[in-house]
Image (cartoon, one colour):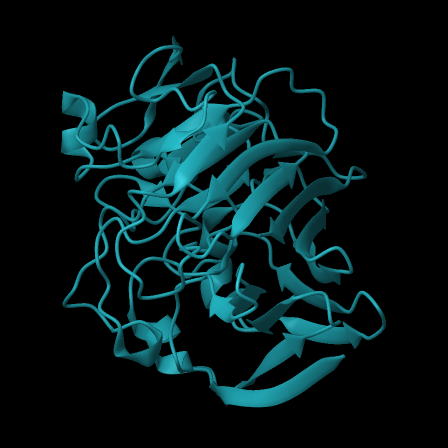
Length: 350
């Protein structure tokens, strides 16, 4: 079942809607066509009570004014592009420096601020199909890019996200979803005691601006090693780099044995609710961000809850950040005639 309801008017005057996907699986999702944003994700806990496990806002106004990209589709390129520029086919492209000297999460008006076309496909596994056409040179990126993002509520109690895109000119693309997960529920406080596992022995070294230096680090046995499940907050402030990043994780982990197939790559488990989330993806990396920079003075989350640092975890499945400026990284170039494909599933049990 899919329920469509008004969710406000965008600054451009377009009507915005929220779509609730339900199928009796114990998981239901509410998504808006403004930014392809996941507003709510309800999951039954071990006592059969529904908990909303993503942070976000009660109205469109919050998504228009707050920082943080809560729940949104990020594009054309997620994460950072150094110096707000890149060279492709010997031509230099200048981007808008929306974060200091660099470009982050798509630029001044990224996909998270666009109104997407929406088509509902009901059934046992209801789908919300969102489409957006990004014109040539929007935000400085070459090529007209046609994007399709499908949210699918699976019978087994999971939310699948499939991304597809084609271009008429050689360009770059690296899409993701930026949901903030707290498996005790939005507004439930710190996620330091959540137990996390990540299938990664290595990660990108990064500078003070969280931009890759080009070096790959072996993290086995250190504070960034989650190959054995451990509490997310056990090693908060564990080294000087983490302290510079506001006291938490904001790193790109490189998965072991990448072969382009959908695999179990991360888990997160909450001790009180008993909810466990498993992340499956066909991408080579995941950006893990523990909401270190949330601001209590920013727009309150749903129900008036304050935005508290370290109160959520983001799993941004992706290719390597700033890959276009690092030839040895996983390529983010999309050729005309090819199709960009990216699949991620967030599965739940308790």
